[in-house]
Image 1: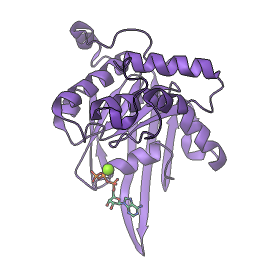
Image 2 (image 1 turned 60 degrees about the vertical axis):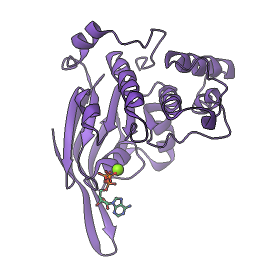
Image 3 (image 1 turned 90 degrees about the vertical axis):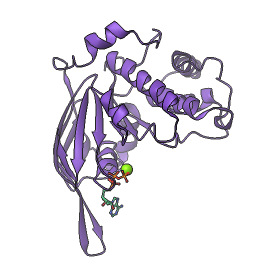
Image 4 (image 1 turned 180 degrees about the vertical axis):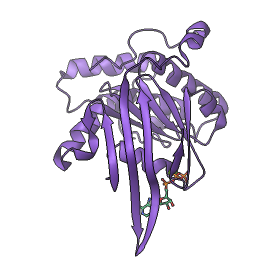
Length: 250
Ligand SMILES: Nc1ncnc2c1ncn2[C@@H]1O[C@H](COP(=O)(O)OP(=O)(O)OP(=O)(O)O)[C@@H](O)[C@H]1O
Ligand SMILES: [Mg+2]
């Protein structure tokens, strides 16, 4: 699997690189195929069609926004791709693996190795430092404790948190906590990052810095799907999918 980490390069935005790379993923390999994906929840006896026959092609390095009104199925789509929910119908092929046919007992491993999650409320462990939160994501990986620490440190430094390594979440700003959670999502070099409303809780300045981080990661080949209500976030993405009543428009 290619190294999807953010490496040692500075995360400072370089405008010319941005312009060169922004919409340039067409030639890249397909990293995920979603085919006729559906999810129906049963509300007592009444079926709720949260997602209907979704088809999506995602290429390596895509920064894909998913937009749509409340209740349209955005989180459902993310939960299915993230293997947190089972599809009623359809297929998801991620990095060569058919996620919809992975046996239940292997799902946690596939999830851990292939997918990084970023949440609106960060979901950091409050008793652990920034460094320990990122290390924790690698606890089942085969690398040594020393290498885990090195990688966590280097990810946090790349995200501008080199001087916040030993801070607990409560000692960090919202934007800093979200950057810790981005470092955590990157820890196992996932094929795909899923972010549900990652800028929902932060001010516009912090939002812009999170978008900048996403764009830089995408330029380095990291594939990211971000659910957002914010047109300013969507505007910066390479593609926008719109979803309404469980139906997707590319
Ligand atoms: N566990 C569940 N059981 C029954 N219905 C559900 C369940 N989860 C979601 N739904 C329904 O599925 C539909 C899609 O929900 P989903 O959470 O995907 O919307 P969303 O687009 O993420 O909305 P929001 O912008 O408010 O987060 C909604 O009608 C919701 O009520
Ligand atoms: Mg949602």
